[in-house]
Amino acid sequence: MPIKKNQLSVLLATVLTFGMSGCGSDTDSTITTSLSEVDLAIQHSINFTAIDAIDDFSQNIETLYNDVEAFCTTTNTDTLSAAQSSWTNSYIAWYKVLPFQFGPLANTDNSSPILDYIDAYRNATDSNRSTNLAAINPLITTLMASGDAITQTSFSNTRAKEVGLSVLETALFSTTSNSTNPADIVSEFNAQSKKCNIIDALSYELTRRTSFVHAQWKNDYRDTALSYQYLFTNNLLENYFSVIDVQGDGTGTPASEELVVSMQEFLDFTGNANLFTDLTRYSTTTIWMALEESIITIENILDQTPETELTLLAIINNNGYEQDVETIKLNIATIKQAITEQNTTDFVAAVQALDGNFKTSVLDGLNINKGLTFADGDS
Image (cartoon, rainbow, N blue to C red):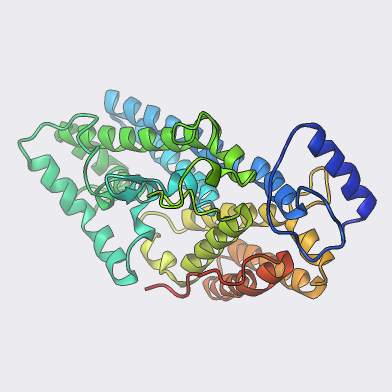
């Protein structure tokens, strides 16, 4: 449904009354305001999607840490099941966060983006992903056999591919000889107490880095005393960082461009990586549940409508791209149906189609930078 000018005027007055501000290029819409409608839609969608996703992931990681501690205190199949369930919930919550691959997640830690320390799987060539996953149990075996003590902070400076969700998954869901039988897993932990030290250190690192991302989004981004949420949605990052800032925060890239590129990169990765081969080692359903959360997040970014018609899809529609909006909605519906049916072929085709929509229809409909560089195919 197109935005009605009288409805938008009321919304703008309300938003400005509460002191929200921003800047950005105007769209082709006839509506004129000092705060662009795209900026307002971005503010609205970020406030109702990104923050919810960050909160949810942070809470799940904290629960996972506590359940790992409980398992190592009382090691049996019941506490193992609880820790495994917490890992699954955390992984699903992580896929709500993945469309926001910028800002705090892109900040580097030991020369790699924090994103990679949480989930190293996605930042590798297609040929290396399977190899990296296969190397996890040999790595755990080596750590268990080492004479070096393992404390909570032992992995604070290790390589990204040796920590994170995939490594903790392997340790919780299998033995070093690749048995997935819960009794065998418990027996190995009881026989090798050092394996508990390993999962304790892994869960600690996840908690530490997730807490950092959470605090940066909501409280204080890079010592500015302002949240990334506020700086990003008001296009204020360039006011606090120079154009040569090592993290790239001073380039003046509008929030609309950053967000569109990030979502497109996620779709490009999802449509090209061997997710349903690599990420079904211990469960055939978890990756589907995780991807469903990602698609719902992207849908909500585009069309979050709890109280207003000021959405990105409404703006695209209002700028004369009605058929493109219908195509985007159809592709999202097809993706969700493919997830329900666990139909890999239909899922990949629809994700790739939606990826194409972001490279064309979304850019044109929002009238944002046509010179953006997009991800194009998985290496």
